[in-house]
Amino acid sequence: MAVKKDRKSRRNSKIAKKNETLNMEKLTLEEESGRVCAGVLTSHKDSRDIKIEQFSLSFHSDILIHDSTLELNFGRRYGLIGENGCGKSTLLKAIASGEVCLPTHIDTYLLDKEYPPTDMTALDAVINDAKVELKRLEKEMETLMVEDPESPLLDDVYDRMEELDESTFESKAATILHGLGFTKESMFKKTKDLSGGWRMRVSLAKALFVRPTLLLLDQPTNHLDLGACVWLEEYLKSYNRILLLISHSQDFLNNVCTNIIDFTRKKQLVYYTGNYDTYVKTREELETNQMKAFEKQQNEIEHLNKFIRSAGTYSNLVRQAKSKQKIIDKMEAAGLVEKVEKKRQWRFRFQEVEKLPPPVLSFTDVSFSYTGKVEDCLYRHLDLGADMDSRIALVGPNGAGKVIL
Image (cartoon, rainbow, N blue to C red):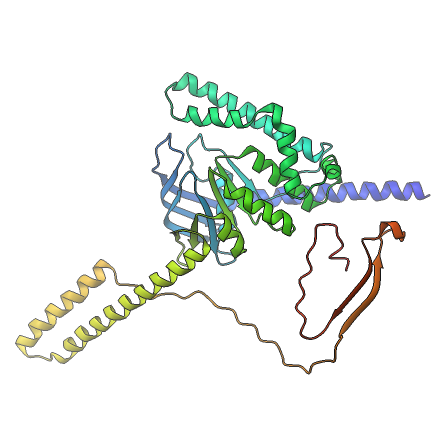
């Protein structure tokens, strides 16, 4: 009877996973069918830089970007920032899916989903994708040799093929997986036996191993513990191709990025040189100067309008009033200085309550084990207290028992 229940449970689990996969595929198709991109590729066909002018992006009936410029230069690391829901992830997906017109030689990789559950180990999954990439590069080199033996792209293809030395695949893949938190034992686990978070790390390891020309990372630290985040920061600092990432961590943006792209409310992409702190400082200075120019121009327009209103019907004043009106018309035709639109600031207020005497929570000699066996304890003899003034950060490697606690 127990065997039948177990079989039924496994069958239901497989059906649930299959339905989940089908639902995800359906959502992906709906997303792709709802995105529309337009723009003019102005960078040279052999350039490793990307420049698309008059770029627009919409999702169903919502216009996300209108008549802006998408520019990504080789060797730079860009942080894409903007309000939640403005379209940052949609832009990355549009680039990765080929909806944005890129030079044909630029390969992209988007990290937005976990590696599929397969019978391959985590190590083999990374190595297998590296072999596929090596074959792709060999084919690209053959094509270039036939079509244009003098192409400047050949040097880059040669360099990448040298980096992908098949004799070093295993050691290099193991180093990357170890940096992302894998142990020797977990590297040899089948991906179908790994959780979603660990399979996401396999996808990240694959991208870091292959090093595509354009690497797109959407919240890459979401599934990483502190140690893996620090390792990833150090690794990406030396990424010498094009990196475009989305992150809500100011420290991560500061330590990794060389440029910031601000996805504004006016549906424009505005570019800043430097990391996040430099962006904040530069933006404040620009907004201060813009506000001064706006106020000066508005005062000038008000002064001119005041004269026009007071001119009356006197012939000599009417001529002057018409001249003043022409000045205003010219200013409007050239484009008036816009008022600075401040970003929304959120404020949280908590109800004042009477303080409870400490300790509010007290744990003494706490141990925990999934199996109930002492030798399997995640932690033993734990003493912990918290009062009304406590602000506690619980850190530790994945699997240490933080969520259980």
